[in-house]
Length: 64
Image 1 (cartoon, rainbow, N blue to C red):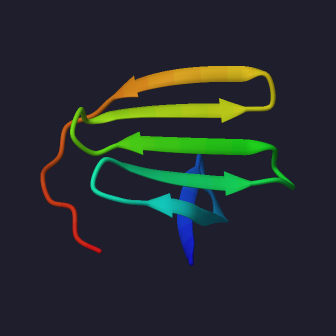
Image 2: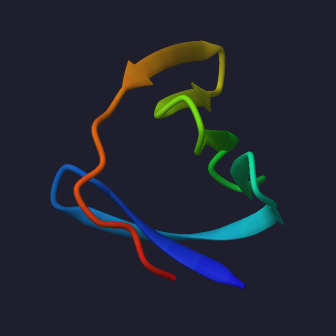
């Protein structure tokens, strides 16, 4: 399945390649991007080409 991810004012459809109790992993080969969301630690790792960003987040509500 696909997830809508927003970068600035632009939305991209990115494939959900893995979804379990610990992580959600999104990948798009055309954009050369990987996003890994660690559900239990509230951490997001983003790799865009050769740039890696580690983000902390806080959850208010998350439903799928």
